[in-house]
Figure 1 (cartoon, rainbow, N blue to C red):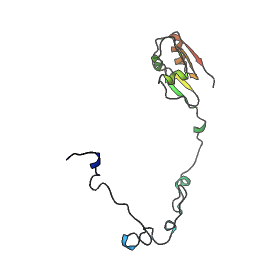
Figure 2: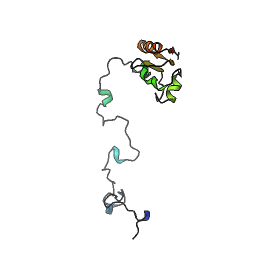
Figure 3: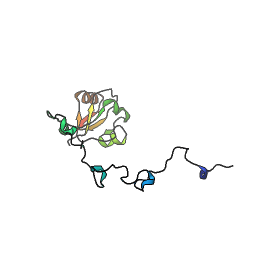
Figure 4: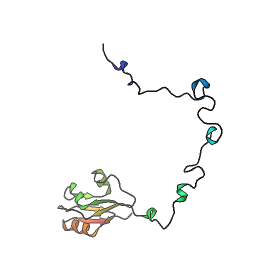
Length: 152
């Protein structure tokens, strides 16, 4: 006997018949169809608001709200290290587009690229970014390159 794609069957017990609700008393789920007698959920079209807890004070109102959060105003930089610039050849001009194209960063965040001074660099590169730390600027210029700040 050959086994082909036409002879595949689900494993025994892995599939079940759909529960047919509201199809009379013989089906076991007739009359109220498993919804009980009266009440909110017995009717069609009933729904509750997001976070509704049955009249109990909802969690988002129970939790104390204190202080100030600076999160909406926080600067969001894409950070790279000086050691990440080793991927580029000597004398290359490196900006945000080149960093994305080379796969050093996936995307440039809202406030731009921030170059940090972790690692070493051994070649002269022309780097343009939105922010440089002092150590990063020092290492790039010491290697014979330049670090130019881009304004947003």
